[in-house]
Length: 280
Image 1 (tube, rainbow, N blue to C red):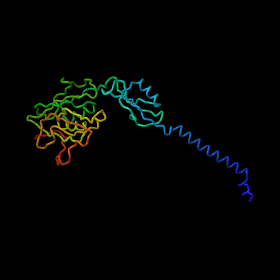
Image 2 (spheres, rainbow, N blue to C red; image 1 turned 135 degrees about the vertical axis):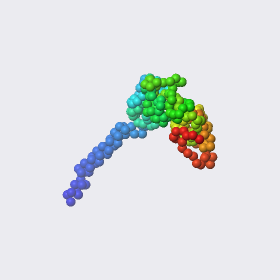
Image 3 (tube, rainbow, N blue to C red; image 1 turned 60 degrees about the vertical axis):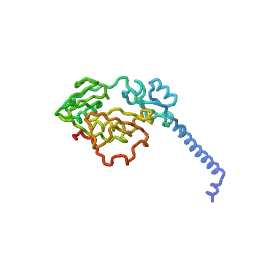
Image 4 (cartoon, rainbow, N blue to C red; image 1 turned 180 degrees about the vertical axis):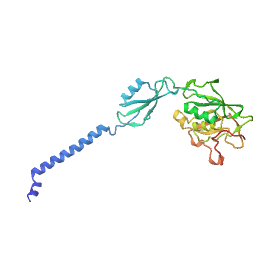
């Protein structure tokens, strides 16, 4: 009975009231602190740092209450030297205050690499070595020689380039290959629905050249150009119509899937010609 009387006594009820008030105060204070600390509901879009100089980066980051960190550099003609080439998170992505934006700058000078010796190698070997070095395949030309698809000469801007010469990384190297004593041909690959980079590789893999590439009105920026796919090509894929080695292949690109040929207009049986060219 005494315990029950104590539970309803003024002293107990007063202390219980104070305890409840203290508990509510602690909970509300904690929630308020978390709200302020995490900036709940205060996410804001990341500004576009692309093309900005270091001074502009500093001002933009401070204005938007963000931090930034430069993590890499590349060399590109897409933006001015010394300015931002790429950022993460991308522009428009919502973040909270003082989030760090990671930036890649465009270098003032291109990275230089040594030209490898490709003469005497097969086209496949030369292609792998060029890509490993950071160089690209340029134009392919052919001349009569018993060493079919072997590299006879390596050139840059029409002039022979020797082993160990310094050259900008990403440069395209033209190759002259042997085509045998006869007129060797290959098939134009099916490029429909592939991006330009994949289409380029498929063209080179069968010893042809990429001619002109034409973007339609749906391609408006660099990101669109990377996502665009081939909707038309010339010459078309046709097993009955081989072409001479080194011939150009012209492609048209879009981001509009409605332009893709319907399935019933495509050849049902298609072969992948990702190896070296063959005689037909």
